[in-house]
Amino acid sequence: SKEEDKNNFLAIKENIKKFNLNNVLTLNKIIDNINSIDDIIKDIWGGESQKIGFIKMDIEGYEMLALNGAINTIKNHRPILAISIYHNVSQFFGAKIFLENLDLGYNFRVVKLSVFHPSDEIYLLAIPNGD
Image 1 (spheres, rainbow, N blue to C red):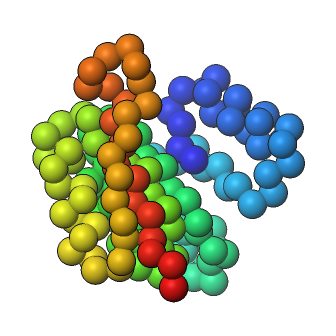
Image 2: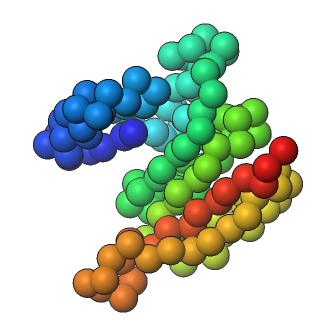
C-alpha cells in the first residue's frame, strides 16, 4: 500500500496490526519512472518474491505509469487488481485495454465506491480466471 497522507498511512499500519494481517506489506514509496512496482518488489525480495495477491492503485492519474512499471509483477503473480480510473479519460478507457493486451485471462468489472459524486471513486477490478 502506498499512501501519501501520513495519517492515512499510519491508520493502515494500525489496522494491519490490529487485525494481525501478516501477509500485508505497506510501502511508503513514490512510484515513478525511477521506482516502479517491479523494481520495488525486486528490491524487497531480491527477485525471490512472495506471492503478490492484490494490488490497489489510486494515485491521482498516474495509474497507467504504475501499470507499465508493474508488468512483470502482474505477469508473474496475476494478482487481483483494483485500479482507480476516474482521474482522466486515458486511464478510464486505457487501463482495461492495457491489461487485456497482456493476455493473462482477467475478468473485468467497473465499480463505483462513492455515492456522493457521480464521477469519483470509480475502479476497474481485474480478477484473474481460475487456473
